[in-house]
Image (tube, rainbow over all chains, first blue to last red; front, side, top):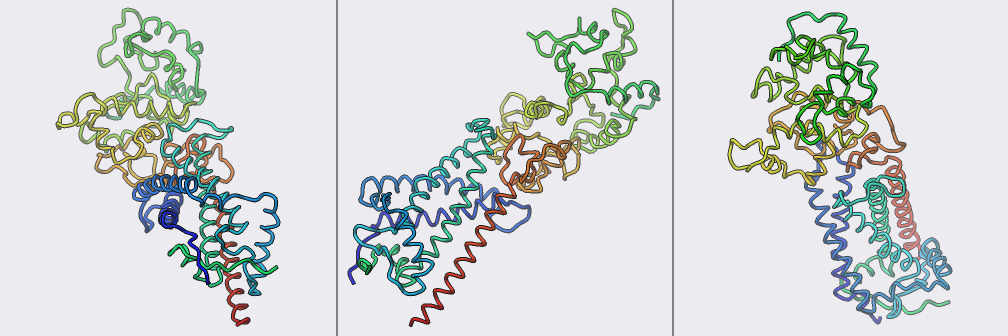
Length: 209
Length: 300
């Protein structure tokens, strides 16, 4: 079967660096948020240092993502076709809750022109262009607490950013869990994992209508 | 500092107890009694020269304002010029603070000070006014501005432990430079120093032992003492406020009214909802995976 290079080296590197940083940030974030005296783990001080360091690295990695999407054709995979996005999402959702159990082909298989199905497009756009930037900005603001405004929309400034940061952290944790599982929903459970490791995925062609 | 050997006039204690009960958290200068105003005619601080006398505003705001001047400055101040001897110049705090029950009975404080690093290394007679200006006494929990109260509490420590000069020599171990150096393990030192009092970490355990100041070696260094749901701040800085102003959903919400403290001001409702979502998602994934495997093996 014809294979296409969906994940060039820079994107694979970005992705796996992201994986390491996400795991580290979630781990240390949980330790900081649910800190208890005498519990096993990295400890508050170490978690703080690692969380800060990983946050800074994640910022740079995010800039790599932005630059990569600007300078290569990867950015266009995220472009939403607003005309049929709802229909596309319903079709993809139907596949996940029905078609996948009946062995139906993927409604939006990979091709040179298409890396993401409509659900991926919308969720990756929300995660990469809304949640993650907010998370990073909030993280940096908490890194300089004396620069945070005393009050934001009637809520103490630091509380506002801390709560937002915590909430978005939870959402990104959820995203990661679902992302890892959906990574097994290729034509074989390992097909997509091999893709993000080697860059190459099989092109299964357009589905039969 | 010794407990007074002489008996206290019962009337003084009654007046003291009644005054304390009536002391509002903040008074205006106009509410000082006439006698005190007369004294302040000479003894008020010159705004140009701090430390030159009584700072009227602070005295008026203090818990001692309603006592006037003569409660403590009694013998030797009947006429002018004053005839008070050195010993008579100021009353001993414990001459009033021995009755009336806690918190106005200072016996336990005297014991804490004696056992503290100040009592052991500086002087067994380490007096209240080494740290507290009786004209400006305003307990943290009565202050209208917590940050200001914290700054005031820490200023008392810095008066002796924040001296100008280098940090290198043993004789300069009370310098500000050395103070900053030994606290360098604290991230955001300025934030810590303006959000909590020195005594939060420099006194033992979770009891109200703010006068039992320990040697630096015994100070709390474990961040999680405060940065946790069961924060020590609740037993110290927020001891008197812990029952007030709770915000729905937050643990340690009383702290939240002033700060966000990582680890200590979690929102339980948010966390519970998100744990729930995590659980449901995980369950969904498991069910989906099992059905996939089952239907897949059926097909094959």
